[in-house]
Figure (spheres, chains in turn purple, blue):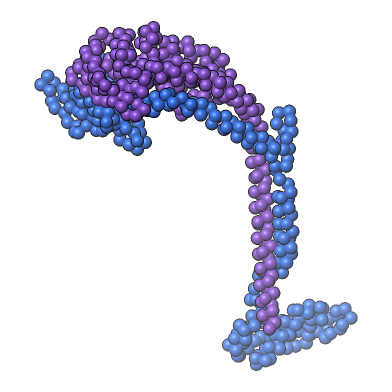
Length: 279
Length: 280
């Protein structure tokens, strides 16, 4: 009986010792975690405190530019909508304007002397697809690989009107974010830049870029210009640039929307089956 | 103590070393119990300790070894010196440790709950604000920024312009064939060294229904490495940005990499490569 009592007392004592030790360890862990939390919070406070003034000015600038852009976009889009309805998806036959555009592009295209338009023909009646009508045609070109590729690249800008039409939406966001980050004062100009007429940009790309980057630091301007070239404006400069003044002078911009259904090369003879769109 | 000589004077007993004296006496007693008798027993001079005057007694005995087995068995049963000492000592500390741990943990949790870092003021520029307020302000600004970005994104889409929306949709279905041909030509030109233009592409076929472009031609090399040039040409075509698609093969390999010797020297390899513009 005495032994059992002593054993039980021993067990209780040991249990109390280990429970007490566990509580001490847990408390130490809690205090250590709390101390670490203090450190983290202090770092957070320093970080937030540093970013907050910049964030405030950024949000204020963004709010002002979005408000201004809303007004501008409404007017710009209204004008572009009218242009698109008249020249890109006309209600009548698109053939006449398309023939002029292709021919004048060929004339304005001065890259090499070997490129010629041998034949251009279109079907008599457009095919009705509900809200859209299509007119099939055939275009025969004669010329070397590089010249035909450049010519087709220019025709590929058919349907585009503004700079934002040749830059994917995600890349536009990247561009605006970069301007906002590196040259916040140029943000409004950058947003307007996206609504700039593509042929106007292609005619004098450096001048148009300089207009939006006038307030940016040289390093930031260089970075923004590089990004613009990467996200689609390099092609505009090289392909559309040489013919842009001619197209502008002949009032053939925007080019009609044209789809190449089939292209075959036989020596220097290139045959393209194309489709024009109308409403 | 078994088998050893034990000596003890009565002076030690009377001088107040009770534990030792008791143990000695108990041993002597047990020696008698087990039939072991002191070897010698004699008296000496008396020693005065305190108020007690006891005759000098010196007990010396040596166990005789009789009944040793029995004695060891009894000793094994008792073994008072082998009892655990460490665990009872820890058990004695149990209650104080538990009390300390409880008080410490209560204080720790109370400290954690009461002394929150969010309540502490932080100096930001020329003002002092609580960290919680600072974070709330930041969250509100971020939310507003997100709303403005969404509003701007909506502006970037022609939602209120039906013809423009239709044009954008048709444009998305149209391949930039000219741009791709330019890229291919640029790749081809990278292989020109001096007067040697090793790659010719006389066959080009684009099928809009399958959105595939097939280019065919020949690679010639005076040094007889036309297959090597062809494989590098294919690799370069795969690096064209519009040909890059996640995990999808957009540029096929030629049906075979074969080179033939040319009568005028070097080698020639024919090729036909299919490029898919359909990345869906």
